[in-house]
Image 1 (spheres, one colour):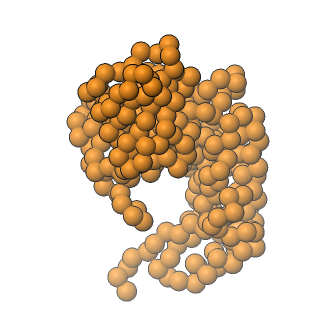
Image 2 (cartoon, helix red, strand yellow):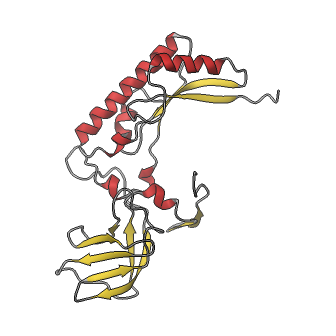
Image 3 (cartoon, rainbow, N blue to C red):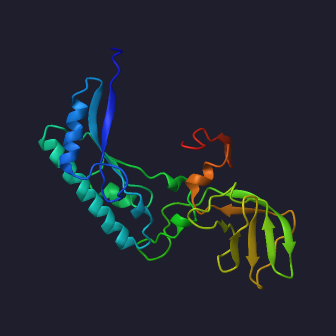
Length: 242
């Protein structure tokens, strides 16, 4: 009655085994249900597969992305044959965007983590077998050395799980290789660093930058970001369930 029309995408399970319809026939059934409401407008499909974004091997990632694109194309074709043109076919992500964009299937790709980067995505390999160079790390959590045991070569930082996410593994320390310093979860408020004998230890009060293991939930822990070029940036969508 208000003249409002909502555009609708049908979520398609293309291998994630999480959400979405399991077949083209089910997609058609949902599209028909959408068409039965004057306030709704069928626009296309959502075909996202999150797990393949983190496949390390380049060829394996490319093959998995091709399977997703094939599945999305099939569903869109069946929908089209039933009179439901897919104006939007959206999917893909940071790990597969180059394959998704080149597939000719998607009208939109969904890379997001590339803007920040994290330890997990940095383990993805490029075509040359080396860590991908498709993006640069830009997100860091500043922490201060508040404890130092030089005999044990152990340094304690004032940032723990309340400051950086551990769900995809421990953070790394910018400027140090993984061989030079091992990172240990010190609980809510602390991170413990174990330095190899050849690596100079930071001093009390020194600031170190942590590279999060997973950027998304790390951002969610903070009220704002501090941009190097443009100052403070508020984190608008954060907190439980957002």
